[in-house]
Image (cartoon, rainbow, N blue to C red; front, side, top):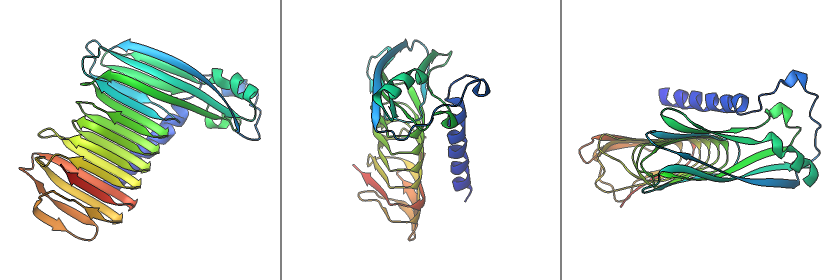
Length: 275
């Protein structure tokens, strides 16, 4: 299907872009080889904090790599505030501590957005060490929010605007979102609670994993849910012009002014609940 090919292309591009862009800026050919470690049983960590005024900017964007990401919207907030932890895992605490300097977080105030990015060694230059950044972020509730990540859970909570997440390996949770949502996951579950504005769009896709969506009973949208191997259930929802097969459920909610598209490309179950 066309949608499947497009979703795979987006996630594969994300994967390679984050591997080669979110890395150190040094000349790898000019540096000696990084010593290999025998295990990652020991860990060193360092906390950090960052803040930037939002002013007239319309969106927040984060390019992470490995680690948990939690973003919460706050009414009346004027800035993006980050408290986080950088972690390196290696064969000794001393070695892990020495390599914390290889892991940095950069925040930029660009003309239309606040942009945060993780920088760390490219995979071939880690020596087998694990580099992790865990983010806890608060921001204005009405700021558009966009997250790209390779590994780890992503949680967005109490945001009254459009959100998007591309997560290669890990689950995504959306809580109390009032806006459109575009979520792509390769391996992981999508848990979501969304109030869709008129003419808004919800597009949730995962390769393997469940999709659970909770929406108000008065939601207005064209509805489409597709699985390859799994089940589709929609308790409490009234679909007009319903079309149902073992792998598809479609129809219209309310007057059909928005769109809801849910797709599991391999194995998983879809459950949509009206409240």
